[in-house]
Length: 164
Image (cartoon, one colour):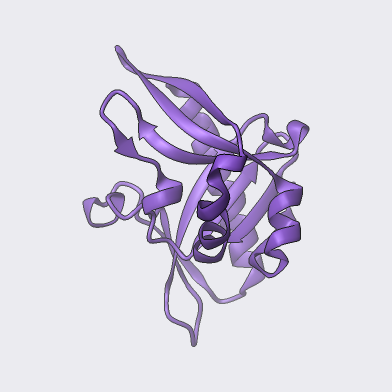
Protein backbone atom coordinates (compact mmCIF):
# COMPACT_ATOMS: atom_id res chain seq x y z
CA UNK A 1 0.00 0.00 0.00
CA UNK A 2 2.91 2.35 0.64
CA UNK A 3 3.65 2.40 -3.12
CA UNK A 4 0.05 3.24 -3.91
CA UNK A 5 -0.09 5.95 -1.23
CA UNK A 6 3.24 7.38 -2.36
CA UNK A 7 2.03 7.55 -5.96
CA UNK A 8 -1.21 9.23 -4.88
CA UNK A 9 0.68 11.81 -2.82
CA UNK A 10 3.05 12.56 -5.73
CA UNK A 11 0.08 12.92 -8.08
CA UNK A 12 -1.70 15.36 -5.75
CA UNK A 13 1.50 17.40 -5.35
CA UNK A 14 1.92 17.69 -9.14
CA UNK A 15 -1.74 18.64 -9.62
CA UNK A 16 -1.50 21.20 -6.84
CA UNK A 17 1.47 22.87 -8.54
CA UNK A 18 -0.20 22.90 -11.96
CA UNK A 19 -3.57 24.25 -10.79
CA UNK A 20 -2.12 26.97 -8.55
CA UNK A 21 0.20 28.11 -11.36
CA UNK A 22 -2.71 28.00 -13.81
CA UNK A 23 -4.85 30.37 -11.75
CA UNK A 24 -2.74 32.68 -9.57
CA UNK A 25 -4.62 33.64 -6.42
CA UNK A 26 -6.63 30.44 -6.46
CA UNK A 27 -6.75 28.07 -3.50
CA UNK A 28 -6.90 24.30 -3.25
CA UNK A 29 -8.55 22.43 -0.40
CA UNK A 30 -7.73 18.76 0.13
CA UNK A 31 -11.03 16.99 0.85
CA UNK A 32 -9.83 13.46 0.10
CA UNK A 33 -10.40 12.26 3.66
CA UNK A 34 -13.55 14.31 4.27
CA UNK A 35 -16.52 11.90 4.36
CA UNK A 36 -18.72 14.57 2.77
CA UNK A 37 -16.64 14.28 -0.42
CA UNK A 38 -15.35 10.70 -0.43
CA UNK A 39 -18.59 9.25 -1.79
CA UNK A 40 -18.61 11.94 -4.48
CA UNK A 41 -15.21 11.00 -5.89
CA UNK A 42 -13.68 14.42 -5.21
CA UNK A 43 -10.14 14.81 -3.83
CA UNK A 44 -9.62 18.57 -4.10
CA UNK A 45 -11.77 21.68 -4.23
CA UNK A 46 -10.27 24.32 -6.51
CA UNK A 47 -11.40 27.80 -5.57
CA UNK A 48 -10.66 30.28 -8.37
CA UNK A 49 -11.62 33.89 -7.63
CA UNK A 50 -14.77 34.91 -9.48
CA UNK A 51 -15.75 31.32 -10.34
CA UNK A 52 -17.73 28.63 -8.55
CA UNK A 53 -15.47 26.07 -6.81
CA UNK A 54 -14.54 23.07 -8.96
CA UNK A 55 -14.24 19.52 -7.73
CA UNK A 56 -11.07 17.72 -8.81
CA UNK A 57 -10.53 13.96 -8.82
CA UNK A 58 -6.83 13.01 -8.93
CA UNK A 59 -5.58 9.77 -10.46
CA UNK A 60 -1.89 8.90 -10.50
CA UNK A 61 -0.64 6.43 -13.10
CA UNK A 62 2.86 5.07 -12.67
CA UNK A 63 3.20 3.47 -16.12
CA UNK A 64 0.54 4.80 -18.47
CA UNK A 65 2.59 7.45 -20.28
CA UNK A 66 4.90 4.81 -21.76
CA UNK A 67 1.89 3.06 -23.22
CA UNK A 68 -0.04 6.23 -24.11
CA UNK A 69 -3.23 5.08 -22.40
CA UNK A 70 -5.61 6.21 -19.72
CA UNK A 71 -7.00 3.68 -17.25
CA UNK A 72 -10.61 4.73 -16.73
CA UNK A 73 -11.67 3.07 -13.48
CA UNK A 74 -15.05 1.39 -14.02
CA UNK A 75 -15.11 -0.91 -10.97
CA UNK A 76 -13.25 0.26 -7.88
CA UNK A 77 -13.45 -2.98 -5.91
CA UNK A 78 -14.68 -6.04 -7.82
CA UNK A 79 -14.95 -8.11 -4.64
CA UNK A 80 -17.46 -5.60 -3.21
CA UNK A 81 -18.93 -4.66 -6.60
CA UNK A 82 -18.34 -0.93 -6.06
CA UNK A 83 -18.41 1.40 -9.08
CA UNK A 84 -15.25 3.11 -10.25
CA UNK A 85 -14.65 6.81 -9.88
CA UNK A 86 -14.74 7.43 -13.62
CA UNK A 87 -18.43 6.53 -13.58
CA UNK A 88 -19.64 8.03 -10.30
CA UNK A 89 -17.39 11.00 -9.55
CA UNK A 90 -19.15 14.35 -9.36
CA UNK A 91 -15.84 16.14 -9.94
CA UNK A 92 -15.64 18.77 -12.66
CA UNK A 93 -12.06 17.88 -13.50
CA UNK A 94 -10.30 14.53 -13.65
CA UNK A 95 -6.63 15.33 -13.12
CA UNK A 96 -4.97 12.27 -14.64
CA UNK A 97 -1.28 12.29 -13.75
CA UNK A 98 1.32 10.30 -15.66
CA UNK A 99 3.89 10.15 -12.89
CA UNK A 100 6.71 8.74 -15.03
CA UNK A 101 6.45 11.63 -17.52
CA UNK A 102 5.41 14.24 -14.91
CA UNK A 103 2.42 15.17 -17.07
CA UNK A 104 -0.92 16.33 -15.76
CA UNK A 105 -3.88 15.78 -18.08
CA UNK A 106 -6.83 17.93 -17.02
CA UNK A 107 -9.97 16.27 -18.34
CA UNK A 108 -13.43 17.80 -18.31
CA UNK A 109 -14.90 14.73 -16.66
CA UNK A 110 -18.50 15.24 -17.76
CA UNK A 111 -17.59 15.73 -21.43
CA UNK A 112 -15.11 12.85 -21.52
CA UNK A 113 -17.56 10.53 -19.74
CA UNK A 114 -20.36 11.51 -22.18
CA UNK A 115 -18.06 10.62 -25.08
CA UNK A 116 -16.73 7.40 -23.52
CA UNK A 117 -19.80 5.65 -22.10
CA UNK A 118 -21.60 4.97 -25.43
CA UNK A 119 -18.43 3.42 -26.87
CA UNK A 120 -17.06 1.73 -23.73
CA UNK A 121 -17.27 -1.74 -25.28
CA UNK A 122 -14.76 -0.68 -27.95
CA UNK A 123 -11.98 -0.59 -25.35
CA UNK A 124 -10.32 -3.54 -23.62
CA UNK A 125 -10.66 -4.00 -19.88
CA UNK A 126 -7.75 -4.56 -17.55
CA UNK A 127 -7.65 -5.55 -13.91
CA UNK A 128 -5.18 -4.47 -11.27
CA UNK A 129 -4.73 -5.80 -7.75
CA UNK A 130 -4.19 -3.49 -4.79
CA UNK A 131 -3.20 -4.57 -1.31
CA UNK A 132 -4.34 -2.52 1.68
CA UNK A 133 -3.06 -4.11 4.84
CA UNK A 134 -4.08 -7.78 4.73
CA UNK A 135 -6.80 -7.20 2.12
CA UNK A 136 -6.35 -7.57 -1.62
CA UNK A 137 -8.90 -6.11 -4.00
CA UNK A 138 -9.34 -5.98 -7.76
CA UNK A 139 -9.95 -2.83 -9.77
CA UNK A 140 -11.29 -2.97 -13.33
CA UNK A 141 -10.73 -0.24 -15.87
CA UNK A 142 -10.90 0.46 -19.58
CA UNK A 143 -7.64 1.00 -21.43
CA UNK A 144 -8.29 4.08 -23.57
CA UNK A 145 -5.58 5.60 -25.78
CA UNK A 146 -4.89 9.24 -24.96
CA UNK A 147 -5.01 10.04 -28.69
CA UNK A 148 -8.59 8.73 -28.95
CA UNK A 149 -9.80 11.08 -26.23
CA UNK A 150 -7.85 14.04 -27.57
CA UNK A 151 -9.18 13.50 -31.09
CA UNK A 152 -12.80 12.93 -30.01
CA UNK A 153 -13.14 15.71 -27.44
CA UNK A 154 -10.11 18.01 -27.90
CA UNK A 155 -11.75 20.86 -25.99
CA UNK A 156 -12.10 18.60 -22.93
CA UNK A 157 -8.40 17.74 -22.54
CA UNK A 158 -5.50 19.96 -21.54
CA UNK A 159 -2.01 18.56 -21.03
CA UNK A 160 0.49 20.32 -18.79
CA UNK A 161 4.06 19.25 -18.09
CA UNK A 162 4.80 19.62 -14.38
CA UNK A 163 7.85 21.62 -13.36
CA UNK A 164 10.60 20.26 -11.19
